[in-house]
Image 1 (tube, rainbow, N blue to C red):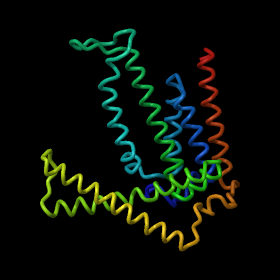
Image 2 (image 1 turned 45 degrees about the vertical axis):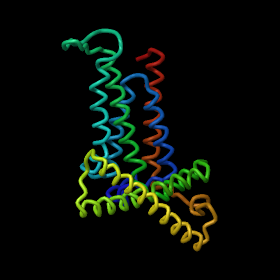
Image 3 (image 1 turned 135 degrees about the vertical axis):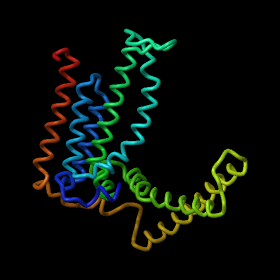
Image 4 (image 1 turned 30 degrees about the vertical axis):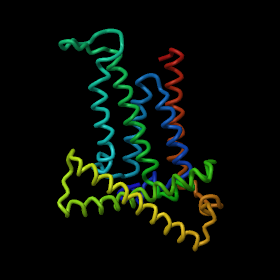
Amino acid sequence: MSDDFLDKDSPIHRMAPSVRVALAFVFSLVTALATTILVPLAALVLGGIFVGMARLPVMAVARRLLPLILFLFFLWVVLPFTGEGAILYVWGPLCVKASGVALAVLVSLKSLAILLILIALISTMHTFDLGYALSALGMPEKLTFLIVMSARYISVIEREYKKLRNAAKIRGFQSNTSLHAYRTFAHLAAMLLVRSHLRAGRVYNAMVLRGFDGRFDSMVGPRSEALSGCLPQTMGMVISVMALLGVEVAVRLGMI
């Protein structure tokens, strides 16, 4: 969760957390199981609409998409030259296959669409709102606790790593492939593990002092979610899911 995506006044942010998680899961499932290009393409358009509805900064969203785009770039280097069927282009000993290109396009559209939907619906809520939503949807309490605490403290562990890395650079450390560099990285990993363990102990003791008994009461306790303010956008998303399902069923039945 990024601070750039939180606490905004938008139709997405006003939706109930459990509704957003459920819709994100259904959208992602329908998109991932699609067999033709129509459903992922429609989902990609919907993902862009959802990002616009959430009023998220374009550059921040682009930074989130950059790692996936880099991965897809390497995918495009390999997939077009694999598969069977018609040959689109011959480049020396390599042949660009139609099936490989189609698979690369399908994977790219699915990946981008799912990530945009998750950014718009999931990254715009606080960590403990996500935990409450998962618990309200029937997720096991231990798994919910693990997900919430991991999401909460990954950034903390990252800051600890940056402190250790900066301390090493100040002392003249240079990242290379020497034995000394590998030994230094091993020491950094060990120190990070030790600091994480110590911080986990302090956090646990602080939670016990506040009455923690192994579960978050805010997750499992009753909590009102006003659906009146998010009913129009929720109904719109439900209709969008049904439309995607209808397109996929029509394609599989040969109607499209």
